[in-house]
Length: 292
Image 1 (tube, rainbow, N blue to C red):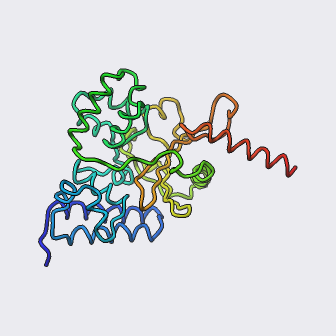
Image 2: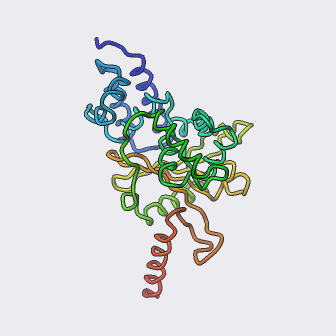
Image 3: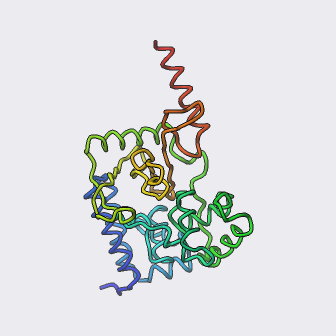
């Protein structure tokens, strides 16, 4: 029998829970199996997985059987923080504000503003935002505070991580919009399983539809935004957050909304990729005009 390590058992149990939740929520069976196989790999290791993370980083995890980049990122997150945003998302218990408050200098109000403005959920996502300038756009942050957060996170995380998806490495605009359409169509038909988010849901009602779907080798999870801002503006049935990854790439996410002004008013737009959306709709309009 292999020696049992508490961290390994903790992580394997959570991978199996994700597999169960994905199965219940109608995800691709091959994706479900991937998490179960990864759990078996982790629990049968003759080393503590936390030691692998500390000594070899994600490269050491990816070298293990049944562990690709996305699963390595999940193991890394759990080993370092004790939490897993994806699991909390599927449970409906995700509370990024509490996670951000573990960073010295970030209180409850700022943590909420960061999440509502940037739609990020992990310390890694926060660190990336501190590097690429997005954190500075949050009211009350500015250049100096962003630099302080960046330095603090570097000390907290203490490792070199692979870069997140870059422009050109994301799903195509038409693919994201197609997932958005599938989600909203099936939601309107009451054809999706629902989860009971803990945030802004005092009654504990299972109201939030969730979709797991694939496009080629891209895996997608879609759900309506459950942020304070979405509730404030009445957009909880309009704003759709789409999470995506490939087995060999870290997770990214996009938010799709109905544009309320400008040349794309009334159309579905991927926030941050408006120029791509304009080009997409221009092609679409041209094709429709040519076929008329």
